[in-house]
Amino acid sequence: MRTFLYLIWATVLLTSCQNKQEAGVPILNLSALSVIPLEEPIDSLAKGNTFIDVQLPAGARIEELSKEDLGLLKAAAYRFFGKVKLVDNQYVADIKEGKEIEVSDAVVSAYLKAISSTNAFADSLKREGQEIQLPAITDEYRNALLK
Image (cartoon, rainbow, N blue to C red; front, side, top):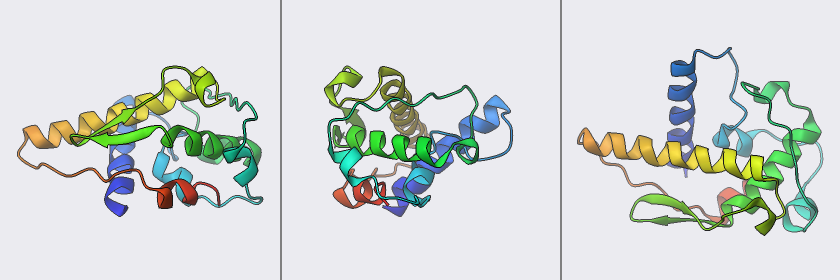
């Protein structure tokens, strides 16, 4: 689990360094989403079928989000990662449109880009002879998003 979180963190860090963005935690740092606590539980939202839409401004940082938007992103991530599996050391999302999980297409697209970056990072390490085994998405990780 820690390896997965560090891998995502490193990928986002690498991307943010290349893009020369402002200081702070990128909005789609999925490891940060799981460790930032919420004021109120989001279990019913994450496990329900209420449509989730969050405006993701370009270059936004997690610390700039309201607690409400952060909760929405975490609930959307919970639903999204329910559709992600590890196949041949690559994350594969079994989702084509956001409406499949009642999440806006923009948010699903952002999460698809995040796992694509993680896959590319793992592939680049493999090409350099530093193969790593990506961890499977577990219920433990998904449930950490609910807190």
